[in-house]
Length: 453
Ligand code: HEM
Image 1 (spheres, rainbow, N blue to C red):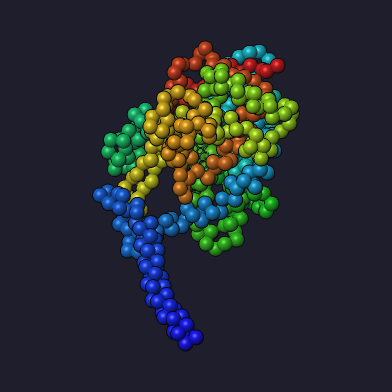
Image 2 (image 1 turned 180 degrees about the vertical axis):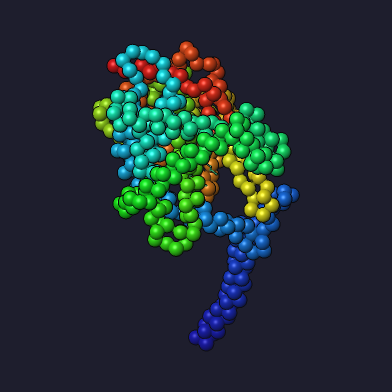
């Protein structure tokens, strides 16, 4: 018994000493892993000038630096959550139905589909983000539309102008061209040229001012009405501004105007371009059109409206698994994403459009092949997970991704139930693009819409 007890004490001692050591080693390993994690990005780019990682916390403090942006993002995030997006389906459906009435008169004639899709996408943002009916895609015989027609046309023209002038090549304004050659001179030149009538910089400035003042009117009206129930992007910002002291200092009137304008541009030109490019590409690939229409018709009778869940699950060929995804790869609407390093002010560009055409990840990159995204296909299985990121990646990735995909899918289901599309003989081949901050069609997408039996 004595011997037994002695042996047990020895065993406990033997175990106690290594347990302490093991715990210390585990702690050290954990610490090293945490430090390694936060410094990994630094070691990968240690030759490149930029903020040096701080001891123990690496670059972590930089993530919290832009508190104004994060307050903003957190405030509006709920507008883009799936549960809220699901509630937007009927509103989206209404806008699409109303827009489609306008698509085709009885005679068969070509339409500029890219104009149609820009009006549709702008109206959609108007309703969902601002709680405002721009009425751009309303039928022409609508009396409200007629009485408002001039104003609306001005608005859309200014919007189109301001979107298309965001260029990054030699066809842009003089200050942009100078900026491409000597970046430091861009802003001083812009400041001077915007004051000289007749220059492109002056025209851009003038258009942007008019557009901003129209958006300011919308913001001012919203502030007056104070509708507590509505849950659009603007109402959420205004409510946050009223309820929290911190938000009042973040959401100054100028800042609200700027983000409203940013939202209009970010949400309409991109979605509109994507919708047009899907229709254009499908029109040139009859085998894809056939499979797509089969899937859409297979969903149910034409008057059965898909809900958010149906859109997510019942259209795999149309959805992210194939056609839309491949069209977004083929024409990457947002070809460049820019970041400015916090300390050195160095610009870092992520070329999404170049990534999307890398033959290592996308063999025959200039072919439109939706099946390359089929989850069972070898190409898809072997591809790097970040090879196709049209909405960007990380904490600043596109906030409207789910919103725009829901809108695009709903529009496509509705359109293909009624029409098929063919390239207009007046359209150039290959399609000419204009490279700006977002991609655009140089001469629009001209299509013939043929009513389905
Ligand atoms: C096909 C449609 C769209 C594409 C391809 C697209 C693409 C992008 C990309 C590449 C970025 C930059 C991400 C980054 O910096 O890493 C971005 C940011 C953004 N997008 Fe989109 N976008 C689309 C639709 C929308 C829509 C519909 C909205 C609004 C309803 C929207 C609102 C925004 C906003 C507010 C940002 C800035 C986010 C931030 O800085 O926190 N986008 N988008």
